[in-house]
Length: 469
Image (cartoon, rainbow, N blue to C red; front, side):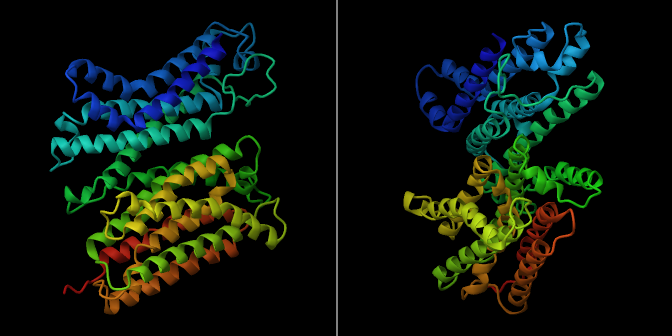
């Protein structure tokens, strides 16, 4: 019974993450009732429930290995009847499913701890934030943490994570000694904690952290930490590919690991977006003002981002082994960009729903909804990861383009000329890397270069000399 029970608790974890997303509404209603103590315990259970359910599921799986339950497909494939207890534990910690649960356990532990301590404890205070500010920050963490939890379950786990014996669908396992599997499991657990910290940074950005830290307003650097494992992966792939093939391109079309590799890259791209493009837009809001001809600035920023995403995606799609002609890559890029464009257009309608407190609410909604939908698009179609270099660059430069196009934005003279030159250099550099890739590094190098180039608009905005009227 290990397999059905473990999957039931994973499903319960998915439902708990949905409840966590609407947790702010539930919290407001419960704390207004008379049974405040009981309701406080209920809210605590809601915050911890995703972690608890995954922990129970992981415990059931671990127990199946310890008891050598051969009705469990993972046990049947990985172990023999004579396996000792250390081999059983090592096998339980091996494989994609176990690694995903390790990541979820770290992520859930961080969410539960922060959501429990943040509203009342001073050791988590970020300076200048009142108790009410901390509560709003915690609500943001609930929303984004629940959303990311759903994406992790959907994007990383196979359709049947704990298949019964004789199942026709099975994701292969890698089994080593306990000394080799335990460090990797712990590393994935710690990576889950890093994901939690990254959600905290994203929530701070959403809570207008510049009000509390005027000198260092945006704690955005955590997003770059998530890029480091993929840089290491790139070096490993390069060293193991003497033939000169683009191994990342081959991996993306792999039927088993392609979807999950793309999804992890997509999540990394989401946090990089928070550290670069989102940061650049918030800096632009503080430094520039909305000029005359706002519609022209909006149209220029949107059209430029769509053009750069479309062009880079087309050139990267042409490098895939199963795409042989330019017409095929153009058709594939159109299919990939269309859902992203729909999400962006929906985001532009957010001001109609009352979310219009930003200086450029339509542009804010366009880029934000597009970025938030990106991991889901990658989970649905792994090849959507080809959009990422263009997204990072297109959305970063969209922060400065309205200030260039509009009149009276405080960006004038040499600063305006430098901004124009910088946008051109960023665009040309990314397109050049995509059109003429280095052998064996095409898609991977485009991802890294796109991430690096997306920092330039942020630097240009921060160093621009503005004219105050």
